[in-house]
Length: 234
Length: 242
Image (cartoon, rainbow over all chains, first blue to last red; front, side):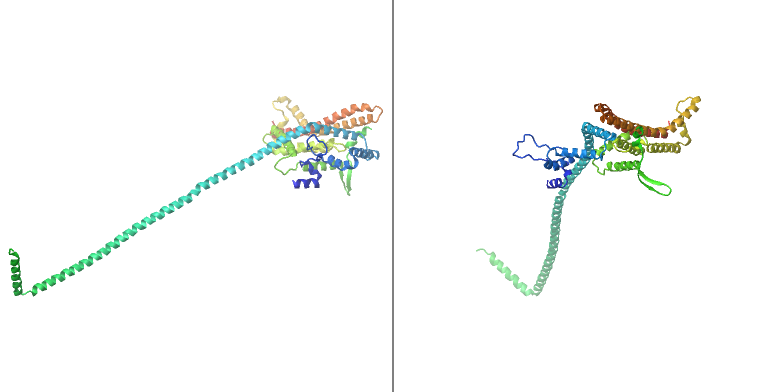
């Protein structure tokens, strides 16, 4: 907005391109109609705007006619056959412009619109296809984000499996160690018992060999007497 | 008095430089041609992809010449279309510019129209000879012509072929010069009646002048189109033979 105002101030010809009314109606005057944005015929507007405050409403026309009369009287502008041709040509051009200008302009604008629509359609189709690709990429990314969860799950599963394996192996090791220790224990026990048995046997043997026939006879007689004492009824 | 009507076609030296052997000069014809060349360069210059009205007008003319070349030279339309388009737009610009007041009409001079037409005929003949060699001469005998009449027909066709070059140039120059002459006569008549006692009678020559000016604008466009059309036909005749 600011740049358009600035442009309209520095270059009067730009007013043709800026959609802005030239006059603003005052609240003190009674205005019934809307402010219309008339197309800017540049030279006429600029010259009129410059001269009207100084010369009045008819000032422009008077100045123009005066200049024309001066040129003709001083023979700068010579009126001869070619001048009439100039007037006639100018009139014909204006009439043709007024009559055929708008239809030709509309036809050309329609052609321009066709070309622009085609170009914009191609651009818009390309934009739509790119947007679709972006959406598809997003969906693919969402789909692929599951792989992180799968990875974590797989990791946990593997950790558990490793743990189980570890426990199994630990149990095996325990068993084996226990077996070995038991073996050692059995071995020791056996050795002790064997030693005990040997010792007992030797002791028995020594005791038996130390017993004389007289001692044996005495012991047997004593045993018989004891038995007899026991065997008697009370 | 009568000679004054032809003053508009006089070539005048504007700037000249006299050397020992020759005189180098720039005439009103040269100036007009330079202006037309500048105009052609500046009007049709558009580097933007999105067209504006001027570009679309050029596109319309381009499509028109493309249809023309497509109709007569189906296989070579893309080769010859730039030439036809350039020729048409240049001639149209020259003719229409000549209608403006105080502007020199370049195409009313044979030097311009003959140089175009003779160059075109030379080009078509040479390219036909290079393409068809001696079979090019079969163009001088119309198809399905009776054999006893062949010698006379060949003579007539040769004359007709030679006069093509002349007629192409003369047609344009004659139309332009005749039209401008008529406009000058009518305008001087209108001025004479305006400055006389019976000034109201000037309405009739003025009306006639308006209608004639309008007609001359149409003739200017048509002559450019006819020149281009005939060039296309002559080129297609020599490339296709029969």
